[in-house]
Length: 240
Ligand code: UDP
Image (cartoon, rainbow, N blue to C red; front, side, top):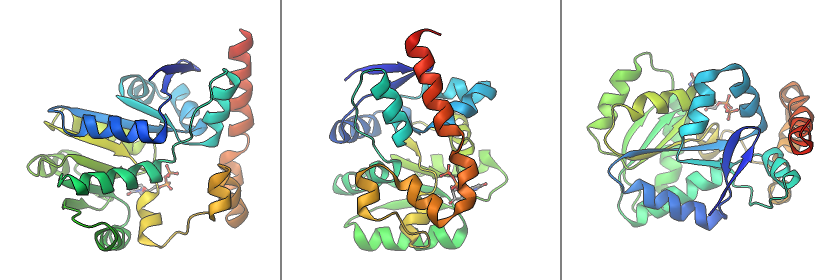
């Protein structure tokens, strides 16, 4: 496995299966690890937020979520799998269930969390969710301390970025173990309240296009982020 430097940050170049294997390895260690699934917006965020930039540098796994990052790596002559955070997290849940590892879900609106939990428990045999907390709490320390007493091994945090990465950073100092993954809007998808783009969009890594067609107000979010990101990568490559 190698890491590729992209705009100052090391990105992991695992295959999907390789990322799952590494995730499982970290999950059973007696330390806390962090997975960031990175997209071009997060590079922008890191430019203006030193705390977030530091988190990107210390996370045990930084995997390319968006097709934009895959494209950026391609410009740097590296072909990598795009690993959608929602797929990575789902597979980690399945593998953790097989090994009877305790799971925590943190984030989303209470009704979304409840539905997501119900659907996951129905779908995945032996899933052991020992902690579930919606994402609208005030006292981080209190939640983290409650979480600590459960000894959860896979901890999915769906607070949106960069909030989830900062929550994980705080938790890392308090917990004893667990693989913590920032999963953005995954619980919304699993709850069935937000539909995922059709398979064909997923296959070509253009879910963002589908979401933008469905919610045109998202256009502001991806444009000009994506073209500017690509431009920055080209400048880095040319040493400009
Ligand atoms: N969310 C949360 N607490 C907050 C803010 C957001 O639990 O204080 C949840 C929100 O309900 C949604 C998830 O975070 O389920 C992801 O939000 P968003 O789609 O904005 O994040 P992205 O995936 O774009 O990073």
